[in-house]
Amino acid sequence: MDTRRIVPPTLIFAAFALLYVSITLINNNNLLFRPVWDIDHYRTIAATGYEARPCDPAKDYPMGDICGNVGWFPAWPLALKILSVGQVDIGIKILPYLFALLGFILFYNLLLKLADTKAALMGTAALAATPTAFYFLTGFPYSFILFLFAAYLYYLYHPEARWRRYLLPLCALLISLSYPSAFLTAIIPLVMILNEFGKTSPRPALGKTVGELAYQIIPFALGPILLSTYFYFKFDDFMLITHFQAKYHRSWAFPLTVIWESFRQFPALYVENCSVLWYGLIFLIFAPYRTRPELVGYFLLLYLFSPATGSVVSVYRHYLLLFPALIIIALAERPRWLKIAYIALGLFLALALFYPIFMNGRLI
Image 1: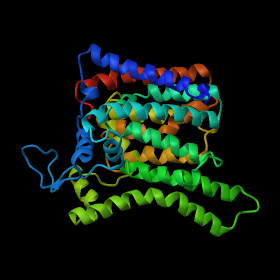
Image 2 (image 1 turned 60 degrees about the vertical axis):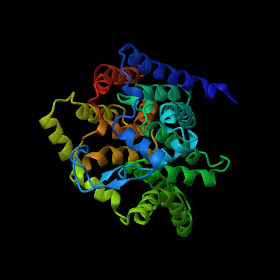
Image 3 (image 1 turned 30 degrees about the vertical axis):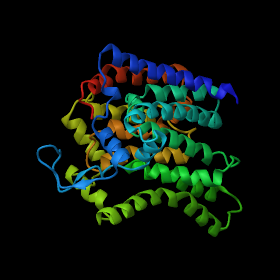
Image 4 (image 1 turned 45 degrees about the vertical axis):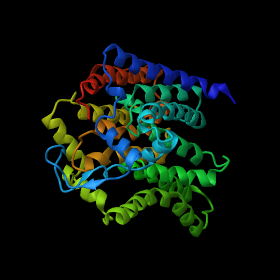
């Protein structure tokens, strides 16, 4: 085992985790460790399974026709249930740290594959300094998704990796079962395969390319289909997720208009607007010419997807899946001081704005 591939990201993760745990303890605040907001839904799914019931005005918000925990995806609760050996309340506090550590290590090694040690250190530091990176330490599924995403890209870019033929679609399936917008990761193999088809001379057989597309993309579609099928047999409603989400009043809209309206109504340091700015400026400042086109495509698609649903509410969490933003910083042909300054800005925003609001229970 090459310790040079493990020690640096482990040290970065240790400093990252120690920082937030220390701040939490110093402020006598335990919100980082509690099953608050959506975390409790993941916990109940892991402990007792899915529940769909009529909404109760006395305890449910927002009100709608359907309440319960059927609006949340099952891969993280399933992993929690299995790996905590039924001790869900303990596992939900410990496993995020384990998956975050593994995610940091895999992300570091991914950047080693794409570039070099300097880029790997810069990108992993950017991961730790993301304004809402502290969510990786909570019972939300973000550390689990970080691990899956980094593992997926590792196998995608390592054709020689052992068991790749089986583990690559498995990672894709688990990603699509982890988060509503995670299926958008399918754009990565789509762009990659089409780009290679257009550049290869002579071009490979069309049937082979179509077969590879199906092999790479179907697992991302299979996750939501499997969950909907399960809901059909358990609750007699194949579209239960959509029916559950109706109470949040999301509707398709032009994303740039939604972003504009948010900035028109709220200040730039409003947490949603600040997140839109921090990630958006990465694309502008660190022009992603050295980043693979499939990762740039994923960045743009996911960046616009949440506003395209009609709102930027909680976008500071949704954008945690924008891992290519950190790869863009790592690979950009920009001065090192500029990269360090931008990473430091992310950490400053985390400590001065986002985490204090989180500890006050107002960053849902």
